[in-house]
Length: 170
Ligand code: ADP
Image 1 (cartoon, protein in one colour):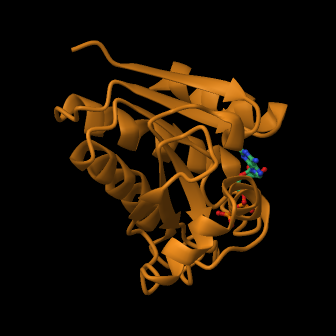
Image 2 (cartoon, rainbow, N blue to C red):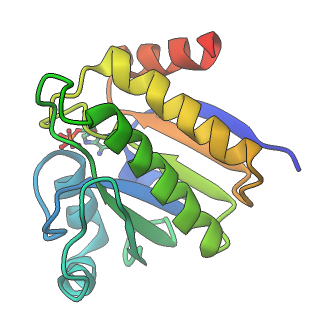
């Protein structure tokens, strides 16, 4: 099976992947950053479905339909809030990517687009987060996921540079 990981500078709400990932909070009831952008673009049906999910733990993931988005599904995952690196942040961030890849596989998604989870309001250092994201997705693909194409959708050039460096380095 051919697999591809790439990066894209842009807005994840415009990406027509089988699933896009939302860097959510544990309530799953919307927030700022990419979460707010996804809810705004998807329309009120997304929030209505999220209300039925009873939230989500950090490092886990839950799936909804994509509503008005070009993506078929949204996979919501609350990333860890950075607390200096001593509260299992790295492990929890890897768990986000693993949980999303597992859920995408279970729903038959061939293409998945990720934002840079936890590196905005949650303040996980980008230079540490990008290699964790890349290595975890690579491990999932190597373990035989049915996902074939993963895109890291980067909202600014420094974010894209960090993911490109991580892709080149490991
Ligand atoms: P977190 O709370 O997990 O840190 P944020 O939404 O604050 O989540 O930030 C995560 C990343 O998503 C940041 O790099 C931010 O710039 C980026 N981002 C914000 N809006 C979008 C968007 N529409 N598409 C892709 N990435 C986005």
